[in-house]
Image (cartoon, rainbow over all chains, first blue to last red):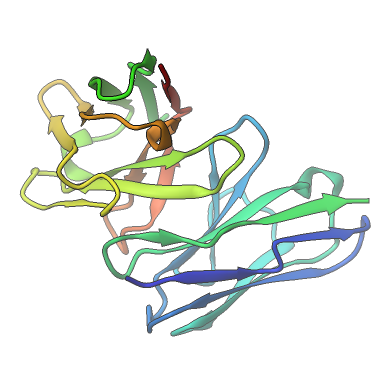
Amino acid sequence: DSHMTQSPSSLSASVGDRVTITCRASQDITHHLVWFQQKPGRAPRSLIYGTSHLQNGVPSRFSGGGYGTDFTLTITNLQPEDSATYYCQQYRFFPYTFGQGTRLEIK
Amino acid sequence: EAQLVESGGDLIHPGGSLRLSCGGSGFRFSEFNLNWVRQAPGRGLEWVAYISGGSTVIHYADSVKGRFVVSRDNGRNFLYLRLNNLRAEDSAIYYCARQTNTDYWIDLWGQGTQVTVSS
């Protein structure tokens, strides 16, 4: 199985800050990585697919990068509505696997 | 607008069975691969099962293999998950999720249905 290790598990930042979340795969998943945002009581929402492609309607302050085993989600100019939990997920191999999540708090 | 709506969640005793449903609308249902993903209370996301558009390819997580059965009815635009021999650790919100038909990432989620396994 391709295990996904996400870090940090939580972080706190201020409005206007830039933050980066990392996700490491235990095997090469090429570009097959998606980032989701989930707010309490809501279903997840896709932000970035294929490692670096922005989903329609997602603000351009979100960006993704990486390839193979190491990936990043970067959020610039943090806004209050970015407070959420973020998950990476690989879709290269079955079983599909998620990172354990990063809880982002906006101070 | 494309939409997925789950139903069928309930409070069920350990060892019991349940069938979850997920109705799709606003898109050509048969052309899309679908998944079930669950989330236990206060926990992260866990992929459960996959079924291809024509039901020819099916995969399960090891944690549910042999107990859960995924199926679909493309004529009715419904996805199903039959949960058998339920355990307390199966308690979760169950989401159905659609994959795009290019590159195959999950682009659409339902709102989820709650399954609670307790005596």
